[in-house]
Image 1 (cartoon, rainbow, N blue to C red):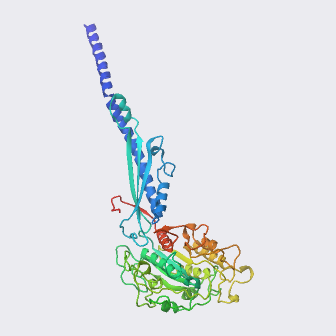
Image 2 (cartoon, helix red, strand yellow):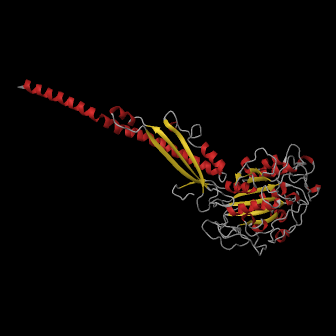
Image 3 (cartoon, rainbow, N blue to C red):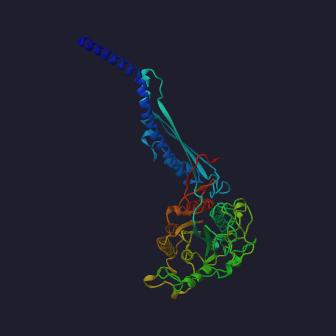
Length: 514
């Protein structure tokens, strides 16, 4: 009896083994499919994450190039996953991918608080980057061996939109330094605008004022006291070289008339009595320097709100006074935008170019008027030659002899002095931009081994902060910018400068993009 029972048990086990084997063979495609789906899905997810990360990087890099759409496309491609580029992950490229990563770059326009709107000097303020790729499957494709139609690849796609520099920034204390020597009264010739060189330079200031933030976003700035609103963000001041008779700037440079009023130009007033790089000026001496180099103090009354646009985005002041200064009047009103105009500053000349004095004064002025969490910025525009300007202090009050000869203030080594002052200002945390306007070769008659190009380059905080316009000679290290089909126009340069004070940022893909 026991023998029969054992025999039956063995037969049942053998039969169940056969059944299990049959079931296993029948379910093998399903097992492979489920397991393969998990493995291939995980592999595809890693590929997608790499594709999205590189797409975000490409969009951010591209936004750094705006509004220059050619540069935008180049930067996006360089930081993409396209074969041979910076983020060319192996998963997304051969031999693992059926199709190498492809990229599409589309500059366009969005509306975002604090972001400069498209129009005028900006043809695109955002960029959309899309990347696609096809990667092979491994396990799922093996199902074809069992006669199951299976996917041979998985298509991936990622999109990112980034806004250009220009969204909410700051706060900044900005000093704009303009060359008003006689050469700036000559015609521009149409490379930047149709007026005089000083008028074209002033239009650059208008661009900056239209894109900086006078007050908090989405607010009306309100009334100004002594040129500043209640909660200013970016305050801007204006300086000139050569110096002017104290007290004439308000009546001449800031008046809004149809005809420019000629200021009273004086010899450069810098002297050891007023301050040096090693013995900084006290408040009284600084006030003396500012009274001759300064045109407009730090103000934030240049727009009525952070988002003012149109043909008259800037606020002209028809009742200028010591308590109500106007940088907009001195910068020519809204002429760049086709709106109301003021004659602006006048380039009378009479004394040649000397950078160091105005630069020294602006630096110390910004320092003396520092605000918590506000960064100091200087933008200096000159038409090149720093060529032996007349100093008014007399040799006894200048560093014109002995071991200190040629150090600020001095009538010799005037280009080197500009570099020395800039170096000290940069060491104190000031960011300096230099713009060469109509720069010619040479240009440093009191120095040996320096040129206008090399001096302006050395004064800037970095090569990316050094520009020359299209009418200048080629200067080593200068940053090239293109906008509205023009290379190195002043409008492009000043747009690039104000944009450099911000960072691009990613925005939701759902934002309307045109």
